Amino acid sequence: MSFSFFIFKKYIKSNRNSRFLNLISTIAIGGIALGVATLIIALSVISGFEKTLTEKLTDIDSHIKVFSFTTKLPDIDNSLMKIDSICGMNLDYASPFLSNLALISFKNRKDGVTIKGIFDEGYKRKIVENIIDGNANLDSMNNLIIGKTLANKLLLKVGDRVTLFALKKNELPSPDNPPNIERFTIAAIFESGIAEYDASIAFTNLMSAQNLFSMQDEVNGIDIKLNDISKADSLTNILRKELNYPYYARSIFDLHKNIFTWISLQKKPIPIILGLIIVVAVFNIVGTLLLMVIERTNSVGILKSFGTKRRQIIQIFLLQGIYLAIIGTIAGNILALTLMQIQSKFNIIKVPTSVYFVTKVPFDFSFEIFLIVSGITLILALLASLLPSIISSRINPVTALRFD
Image (cartoon, rainbow, N blue to C red):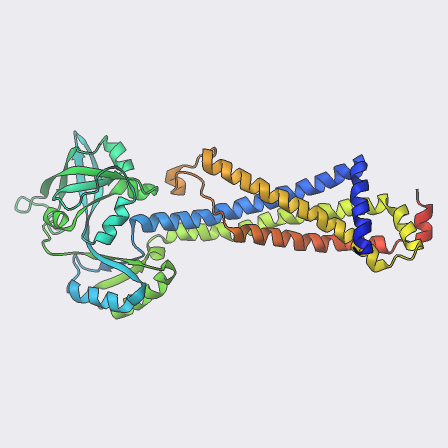
């Protein structure tokens, strides 16, 4: 055991017997703990929002959508082969779809809805994962899966029969071209957690949608699901170059740019602002150590009179600063984890779904966030401990022994 560490242990024990130093140390530790916990929770919420929204959007939507500048996509089989060739091993599935607006009616209650006819089994599995009531059977004709928000608005339940009004081939209605009217059965209700989707989208099979819109054997889009979402932007750019007019590809980050821009804007200032909290908390160490230096002036004088080197004096007070920082950081990590677990389990703080797109506060329990915040705190604590440590090493032993 080094001499500096031995004296440091003695000081720690004596600090516990001093009410004044014990109170000051507790305040310093508490400040660090609160700063660390606040920053961890804030970063976890921001990261949690990003991951949760991305997961929710891709759970009910695709990574890349291929649209048409016209009412339909021509030469669909050749286009699917091109997509498969371009995406290669990154492709999970490519699913043609037909999507259009319609009017849904049930017992004098009406609302607008986007009817999406889907074909691929991979996309159907995504919908099944979000079903909260009913059976997602899209093999039968004129079966409809609607969102929870829309179901609540129209007071719909599984098994109800609704009427859909839709334009024929996207042409304005007239006496010679009346809108199509079809009866559909509510087969299931889904909840994605994204209010925009739960209130405005309904799914059926591709053939039912083609019959509803009088667009037999036609599609107006392709959903592409990748094995790695990080490749979405790069593959979207390639698809734009390779697929000819009227095809146009957009990634999920393009389609929901407002959401991801909002998250990005939230991420930029918060680490700086909340980082200042840690800086303020860490500077509590400076005040605490300076008070310890004053309190231990006689002891420092005795140590220096016995030949203790300046380097050893600096090490003693550095160890005290690091000790306070470690205790405060550990306490902050425990506090943050505890509060996050309580919120996740009991959902004490409610968030409006229409504003934040989620039903409860999402947390990212990432080890990296805890590690980065703790590491920065300890580095700042070490730097903050240098000033009082250097001051203590410059104390004149004669003056110190006479200090009262």
